[in-house]
Image 1 (cartoon, rainbow, N blue to C red):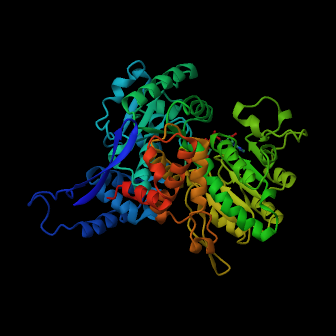
Image 2 (image 1 turned 90 degrees about the horizontal axis):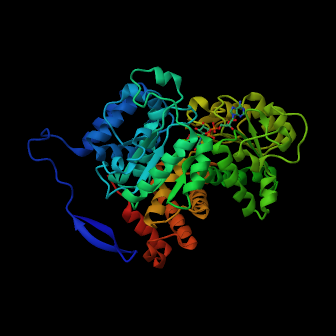
Image 3 (image 1 turned 135 degrees about the vertical axis):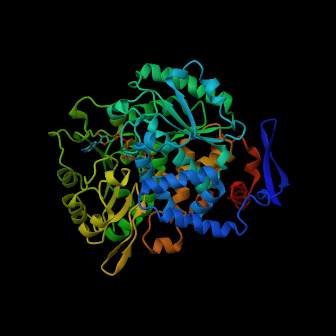
Length: 544
Ligand SMILES: NC(=O)C1=CN([C@@H]2O[C@H](COP(=O)(O)OP(=O)(O)OC[C@H]3O[C@@H](n4cnc5c(N)ncnc54)[C@H](O)[C@@H]3O)[C@@H](O)[C@H]2O)C=CC1
Ligand SMILES: CC(=O)C(=O)O
Ligand SMILES: [Mg+2]
């Protein structure tokens, strides 16, 4: 027997009903080989996975295993997080997206295209598990990782993120809804590919897309009243526009802007302490330079304002400690017209000639931290890392672009060029390195640490909106989750194997923030002590 706590709703207030249910039935006698045993089968499955050489073959195997035997798939994920996450998520999911129309075997998720405009509700109602739906990752495929416009081939990113919701936060598999919106693609290669699975047309105009998005969100709320929406990998202008237009009307967040902001703030809080211990400079004196000023760069910049405010700086003082560089160089007012989202961090204190060379910019700003969200492979070259190392006893260098092949810098190089001093976190994983007889560990500054716990907290609180305070709480929850052992190894993020524990901490912080903001509709959770709340969160996690 399994004990089940079911939330029941009465007059908008949630109560818990305790019931028990029998364990899942075994297949009838004769339908499994005589010596079949689940624990041995787990070994068989991991051996089959490891026998495949290419990442994409492993991805296909895991995708089929998930379809055939979701329990075993998630069991393997949970017991081999460090090995399997890079296969179902970045970097391998990037290859899966690029090749999606060629490796496609079976439909998974929901496709809503511009041809459905006017009938979107009807399409959504075709989803087979409407009542169970709690979390949807929605992409329009217009900026998948750093790989650009992949159109409907972006579906694997929604699927991969949702697999991490299940593995990392115990969201029930049947509660997840991957959605890919097909509004056309400007990817020439795909438009000419006879196997491409999306509409063979260019992206529609922004005005038409906005009408589509209004209808889509309205129908989502009507068809799935308990659903939280995560916007994923929309091109930057749309990412900002749709977050702003919908976040006050529906429970939703943008992972690239807010999730990435939260994960980097968290790692930065820990990294800055290590760097300040080495330099003796106060935390408030950190200076942060970004290469890349898109949804991720600006989203992280906005969230890092909290780092300085936590040190007692005013909003204006916080903003002055952040510099942004885009493809045209340092962003400053006198440079001329610029996209709306870049204006907030545009410098008013520089009016010289355009400054493009990254080393020159570093020598001018003297940053303590260099963050990459530019999609430019190798942009943090030897000269850049050495310049940062000459300025700082422990330079903070976070090449955060995905997937691995677009990373601004590899961990091995960063360690060598900084003579082992670098404090490093990257968007996609790198192996640990030996230097001077010590083992050095790279952090993975990826929103995968945040969204499972943020989503779980928002779902359990039945939040009517995802507030800035909830996003910040997820970040602080993560930065406080480091154990003494992890701190002793100079880690800035916890080990991924502890993801469920971390997601519990994050979810609790998010629920408390939702309560404070008054957006929680599960008001009975307000009366729980912190220990009871953590127990409640754990009890809600699905276990394969
Ligand atoms: N680690 C993580 O958790 C996350 C990482 N990312 C990664 O961040 C990257 C950027 O994403 P978005 O901001 O949404 O994309 P985007 O395309 O909007 O932004 C890229 C930015 O880099 C700048 N850039 C391009 N070439 C440059 C050059 N040569 N020198 C300097 N700047 C240059 C562009 O001007 C733009 O400001 C992607 O690789 C994405 O995978 C995004 C979200 C989360
Ligand atoms: C990690 C992620 O969300 C991205 O690279 O877009
Ligand atoms: Mg993303």
